[in-house]
Image 1 (cartoon, rainbow over the protein chains, first blue to last red):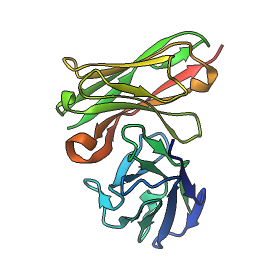
Image 2 (cartoon, chains in turn purple, orange):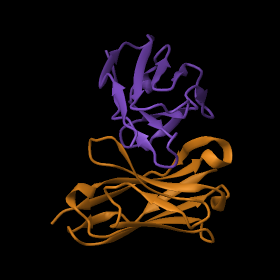
Image 3 (tube, chains in turn yellow, blue):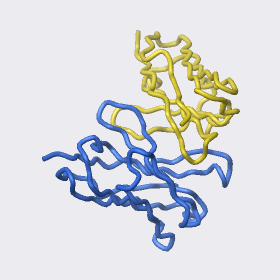
Length: 108
Length: 121
């Protein structure tokens, strides 16, 4: 099983600033990496797939990068609605998906 | 619009069974693989099971293999998760999700709102 490790567990950032979230895979997953946002009481929402492609309707302030085992989600100009929990997911081992444990992005 | 609606959750005693349903609309259901993903209270996301679009091939997480069965009825645009021999650690919100990797290269891009399963005596 491919293990996904996210860091940090909690990230405190002020509105308007930039947040950088990391995700590491236990083995190479090419660019088969997705990012999701989840707010309390809601289902996850797909933000990024293919490591760097924004999903439909996702604002340009969300960007993804990386390949192989190291990936980054960057959120520029944080807005109040961006404070949430973010998960990475590998789908290289399709369809046996694995998720990271999540990073909680909180207001500083 | 694309929509997934889960139902069937509730409180069940350990060792008992429960069947979840997920009704799809707004897309060609028979074209997509469908997943169940769960989230224990206050925890992260855990993949549970998947059924290919062909309605034949399926796969399970080790933690539920032999106890849970995924199935689908393409004529009803519905995917099911039959859960037997339930354990307290199966307590979670269960989401169904559409998989578009084969169709468009996009993974789980649509999720239902989830249904809560609580296993407790």
